[in-house]
Image 1 (cartoon, rainbow, N blue to C red):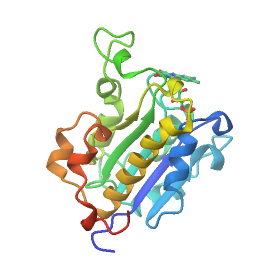
Image 2: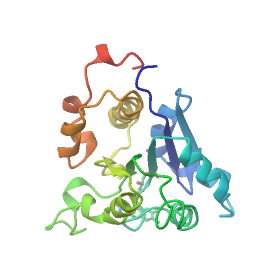
Image 3: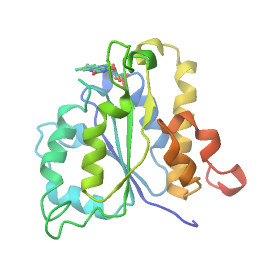
Amino acid sequence: MANSNRVLVLFAHPALEKSWVNRHLIRAIQGLESVTVHDLYELYPSFHINVELEQELLLAHDVIVFQHPFYWYSSPALLKEWQDLVLEYGFAYGDGGTALRGKKFLSAITTGGGEKAYCRKGYNRFTIRELLVPFEQTAVLCGMEYLPPFVVQGTHQLREREQIARHVEDYRRTILALRDDTVDWSGLRQLQHLNHGLEQIILSSETMPHV
Ligand SMILES: Cc1cc2nc3c(=O)[nH]c(=O)nc-3n(C[C@H](O)[C@H](O)[C@H](O)COP(=O)(O)O)c2cc1C
């Protein structure tokens, strides 16, 4: 596989049995070569995170994805606990903390609120990019490149399977393109949300043998 990146998807959903959107998204990328789907709530239902294992996983991958529903303008609690424990001084930042340098970071989130709710005049008052700043700055402090987030919004309106099929396909294409490096990186960096410009930034299918 030419230019293959190893992609680690840290998935955090505390009630997967009630999920409508994330369970389809995660299913679409399970079993792909060089893509590790790591289900944190399944592994750590009691929040006892194996820090050493998690750090080894980070070291073994090039692209780190946080996939989760947006909960109170942030992540579900286990992913916060994961950050607090795994991104240690001397590993992820600080003196000698260079383990994550040069890797790429992607937030892949779903929000109950629709697109219009996430702007100055909307009821959430801030944009998704603004609300994700703690994730962005965490990535940057650790020396990673923060990519525009993949965002599926208005999840409560997505009741029919066909309505989410497009998002599922977009997510799979995104993960494959990041894996295969079939991305126009300068175009990608201009985007607010990665999935608002996929047609422009994913290179043609001839250069994407794995799609
Ligand atoms: C505890 C909790 C907090 C939530 N907070 C937000 C929020 O801050 N913003 C938002 O747009 N939706 C919020 N939601 C809605 C979820 O983001 C939405 O239900 C989820 O993304 C749908 O994905 P799923 O079908 O995979 O569960 C919240 C839901 C729960 C249960």
